[in-house]
View 1 (cartoon, rainbow, N blue to C red):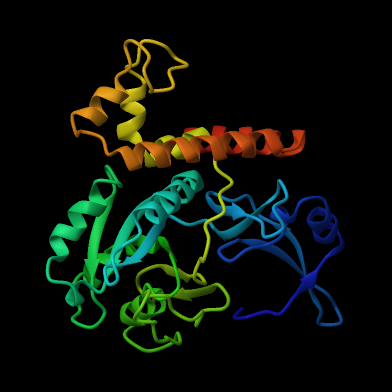
View 2: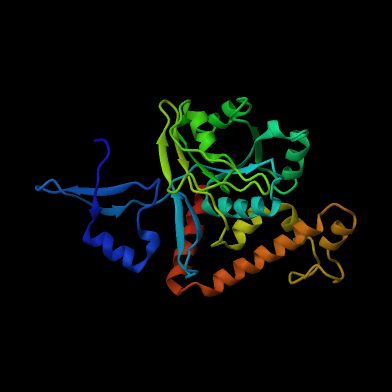
Length: 305
């Protein structure tokens, strides 16, 4: 059938007015209707297997679907300048909350003296997550990244501007289809060369989704998503004597000794606390309809696992 330009049908307009997350996003499967006058209308969005959802720009309780039906979320972060560990953690929460498999892709390893050492630092904040060193210049790691697209899987690239998402897209395709831009030397920030979400079909492999750079990562997170990104902290907290332990000075706390012994980084603990508070605020601000949708999504996610 090829590319089709369609307008929203009446049912789609009504659904979108009630819930913006019902509107189609990149990666969605949709039902369309052909009319005798050659018009095409988009009538419905089919149920999503997974969805990457971030906080909406206007800070309402409703989120914004970044991409749908994604199998793998690749968190792209540069090694030059140094990677932002807090940003990686937040994006891991975003990825775990989507229901997809997260991986971390560290770009520009050829620009730093010890890429393996830097990968180890990132691994400390991404327990259980595959971490790839990928250079589009030398070709290092490109095949490993491409292997994530096997069997028709969908891979979404998320991360800040200047991390090299569009460059990776071009490397995987073997041809320049996405514009790339320069990066400021003083802080590593790039221009938004990708201003919209782009879905690219890789013949014989799968589907790649390139997203615009995220300057800030607004989360529509829940406790399960935070737990997925912080399994080490959650495992320690589960061993505390009291369920409401604040991990400050309570008897029987398992978290504080881990910090004092150097087994858990104090900054990572602080970021875990902040994200837990953020998840609690998100839950408190959701409308009853939002809560029902979240419960349904969590049930579906558990069944998928």
